[in-house]
Length: 244
Image (tube, rainbow, N blue to C red; front, side, top):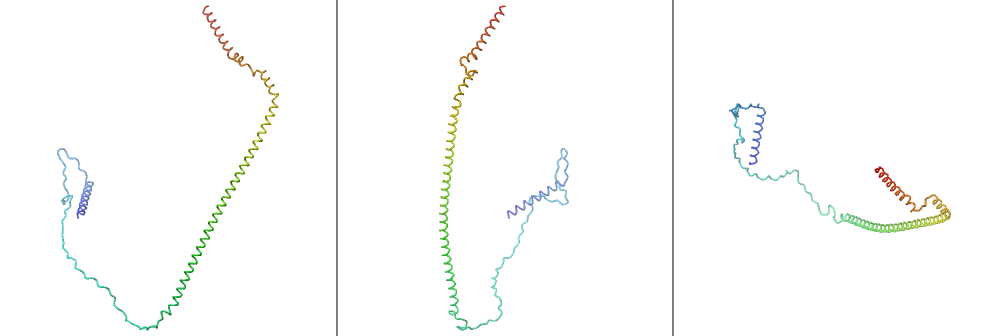
């Protein structure tokens, strides 16, 4: 009841606010009052209505009779139709259970035993196949491992053979290079035995071989001496000019 009351109040407030906003939007605005007067809200409708945030509510009550106890619903039994008929069967008229059931039972038992034997034989055959498969897999893995070992051994032999061959070729190349160097050196020594003295003589005559002291005097001392002498002469000339 409290929740319903709160909802009803909120609904009434929303309705009042909506109506007030509608009236404010429709009604033209009133100009500002002159000095000394105040605007007052007055209802101009044909029928005056009291505006309140709370709607008037009135409680009403009514009395009803209690439910009477209803008797239980009776079980539904359909009406009987037709007539009851009975017949008498004497012992041995239909069939002898032991005689009639024995062949069927023998067939069932025989088929069950046969099926069981077939399943056992199939399981034994599968187990043998699995054992042969495991043995074959082990043999194949062993052969594969041996093949890998032989391939690795063959690879190492080939690599070692190639390395030895390269070393031998490198050794032959170095021997040939050494022999060529020795022959070239001997030939150069024989060829340059008479060439070197003549070349040195020509260079000496051309002035490539000189006395370092003499060369130092010519390039360093004499230019310095000439510059000093020239400076001293300039000083003497300047003194004479100043004296004159």
